[in-house]
Amino acid sequence: MRYSFIHPKPKPRIDPESRILAIFIVVTLLLILGFSTFILLKKRSMQHEIVSMQERTRQLQSHSARFKKEIARIEKLVRKYETISTNNTLLKESIQNLFDLVPDQITLTKAILDRNGLVLYGVTPSKDVYNYLLLAPLKSVFQRNVTTFYPLKNGWWRFVSVNEGSIETGSEVEE
Image (cartoon, rainbow, N blue to C red; front, side, top):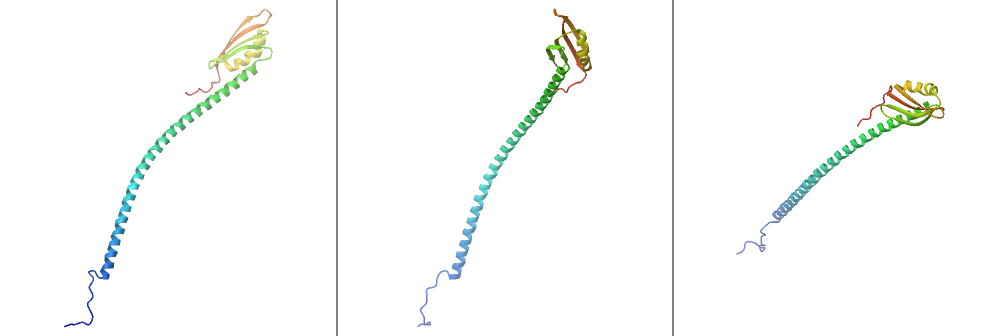
């Protein structure tokens, strides 16, 4: 005896809705697993980048410190150069002024200029020419003037003039 007009169909173990739900759950789990793996890989990559950036930062800081020292050294050299250049300019002007002081009648054979004073060697036609034309300007510049005369065979005088204690004190060179 049969109670149904149709033949029974075999019943699937998992109905279609459960199958869709299972596929959705598996896909979701795979996506979560893939995303987690991606995040872990990115985290490791970032950690390596952080370490390399820290190393690079240390290198750049050491370079920066070295460059700062080099800049300080160069600035010191520039200041020293400027001081030397200024002193050389002042010395050049002083020498030019010294030679401007010497009248045409007096001939200098040697001049020694140092920090303490000036020593002049030369020839003059007479002591008076020296005293009026060269000694007066030297006295206005130096505090102490000592001149020694030696007669020559032709009637002229050889002199050695030692001038010390400049009134105008120049700037000292820093070392």
